[in-house]
Image 1 (cartoon, rainbow, N blue to C red):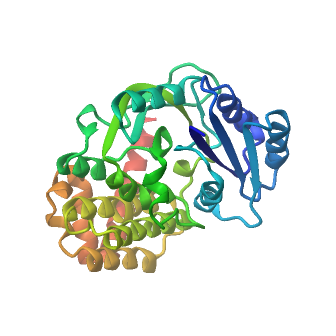
Image 2 (image 1 turned 45 degrees about the horizontal axis):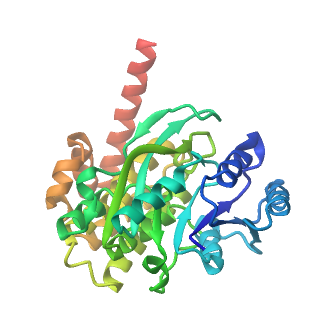
Length: 342
């Protein structure tokens, strides 16, 4: 079997989201591949839709019905247990791909000897094959036989896992799998996978359609989602320690943790969660200091974090109460200005 594609599914029946995804997978231009769809205890008729596809395409389509809801990471792990492919790919069940998506990635791998291949994607708000807003998932400078410099670059800017395929050994030669029961599971393990690859190839083509809708993970901000992102960052650092690359790539891991655990989470929480909890914001700052005491001196922090955010973070490091009061006044003032302009 050349390729296994794993699709975690949870409540994606409405609005033809799931059928768009599955149709794009069924109609791939390659022939030697399998689709493993894992239903994560959906409460809509997603599982029925998956069973219909399994009946129509028994040689290509396999359904696993999870007994408990484990979030995407747990669903992906169930798929990995049964995948037979020489290559492994993943797709989110509300996204879709071009008919030649996997053919192009596999062809590039065969031409170059790469063991990890990726491409660009585009954002879209409608079910169509029209090109939307293109997002360059990686950079040409990151591709080729991987060196320490390229590894550093990939840790800092890994790009999305779902627009890549991985040679089987990258995953199966090691015991770690996706963390379960949280979102942002890809962020937790992507560094370990990339650092096992020897040769990365990148196609500057948007072959993956990333569907933007209100229930997308990136558009839903709750304290639980923030906690999940923080846990994914903790796992990322544990992985770096366990597999022995924390010291070698310390500045890059520190920067990635700072962004995932702290900067993105702090400002998402403050902007998106209505009932903000002082204890939560205080604990986040305390753990950030304890995990990486010198994070504000990291050159990537100075380069990549906006000056205004650095100012607010400096304030938070000194006083959570002062930070939260200042942020509330600042946010209120900006909303007032917007209303005046409107």
